[in-house]
Length: 68
Image 1 (spheres, rainbow, N blue to C red):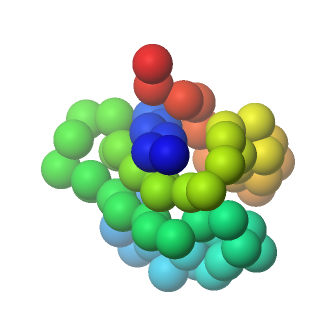
Image 2: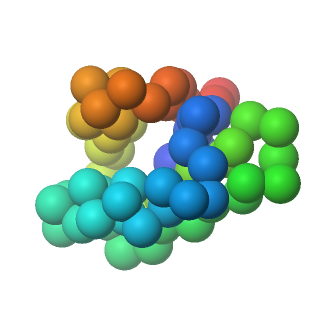
């Protein structure tokens, strides 16, 4: 399952955000597209973690919303 989010994460925070997402064992791949105006976060996971990821990142002060 591929999850795609619009965020306010920028490249200097990539390592920090990856460390936060490491707590989700269902995630196999995390990719960022900082060139895109929406600062895209793409996650490959074995199940739908959309609400969990949004809650985590938003609670840490980032904007994070799934793109449909």
